[in-house]
Amino acid sequence: MRTRMIAGNWKMNTTLSEAKNLAQSLTTISSLQTEVVIFPPFISLETVRTSIQNSQIKLGAQTLHHEEKGAYTGEISGPMLKSVGCEYVLIGHSERRQYFNEDNALLNKKIRAAISHQIIPILCVGESLAERENNTTLDVIKTQLLETLTDIPYTNMIIAYEPVWAIGTGKVATPEQAQEVHAFIRGTLSEHYDQISAEKIRILYGGSVTPQNSPSLFEKPDIDGALVGGASLSTESFINIIQTH
Image 1 (cartoon, rainbow, N blue to C red):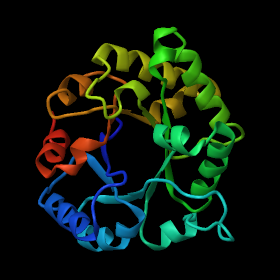
Image 2 (image 1 turned 90 degrees about the vertical axis):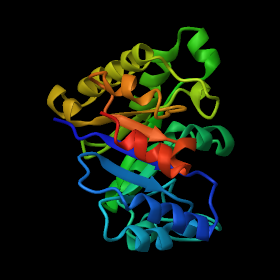
Image 3 (image 1 turned 120 degrees about the vertical axis):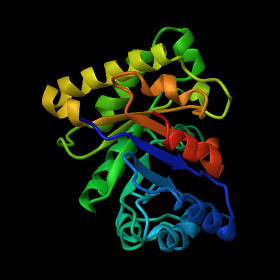
Image 4 (image 1 turned 90 degrees about the horizontal axis):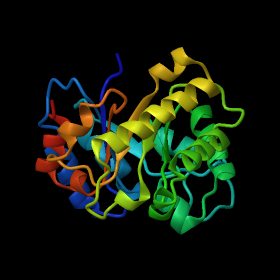
């Protein structure tokens, strides 16, 4: 049985005080049967870690550099993230792919870096609107998975399916569309690793997730939770998604 995960990606939002207040407001949740992870901006990681340290909420980072240290101005390494208490890191979010030209070969290095420092990678995959309209969604997803996971042994990782056309647009894949891709992802993982391992890997849906659409998404057998963007900046909305039955 896979434990549901709700991950909140704050992106480039919240000042230090706002991050502290938002993190503290989430610690009112207790007796969680769902794993909750939040991904604040880098400058807020230590403050948020302190705010959630006596709660069940876990800490993650929005990306990392593939090298451990060096002359990479503005970058953050695995050891740095580990030292501040990060247990998870997002790899290959569509905004990183689009705005920072991160390709599958680079993401492969980032996954290796995360694993080497015992940080669990959440690998994001997804198609653009043009790719969906051209009926190449599954081809795109398979290429992203296989190229980013090349020569990476089975490990404790998470996959997030985020159709690019649904991120921040208010559009959301129907539960049936999402389930089709999630099942395909699990099938691809079973070919790359093995069926038993693939059944253990959690696959999250990301793309304008709200308290209103989360129940129908979570009913699907291969949707193991959500990577939440805008709604994770609202305490009420995020908690409602976490408490979805």
